[in-house]
Length: 212
Image 1 (cartoon, helix red, strand yellow):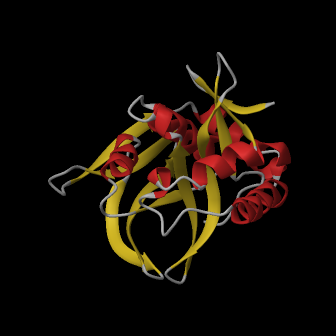
Image 2 (cartoon, helix red, strand yellow):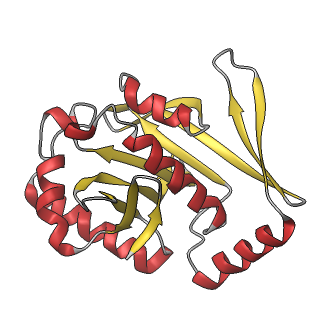
């Protein structure tokens, strides 16, 4: 059953029988250029188990991306709790198969995941951890309204932390952005107050708010 649907895509929870598709993608050297190294099949299986456990604990995790028309495996995208530089964050991430690069798949999926983080799960802040040289992934972050906040490292892995923050107001949510010049601006997403309150009650009832 899809968790999210977009014009071209559906995002659903991973199942154990998705291991082969996942392992093929994360075990490919070309598709792991901006990761510390490719994963072995056993490492992919461990990642899958941890991710499936997130669904039960938080109500969200990384979801498998499929095409609406064919249900083929395109990659994954979603949100998950993350301890980063001594703080509890919620990470948004995406990874698509190389046969689907440059088709806007990651941006479309990440936009849906970002909106679900706010509307369904009541989160107020998201971060993305991206290698400084991964220009395509940095563009995806910028396309969904994130800004480069700082540089950090995960062990020997250098990274840029992208972030976006949602500010609750009266019937309105403001997503903070920064443009290329560095000047701040606010992208305002208007919502009816009744819809905002309804979504808040929905997120509370699901028990999947995650860490702020």
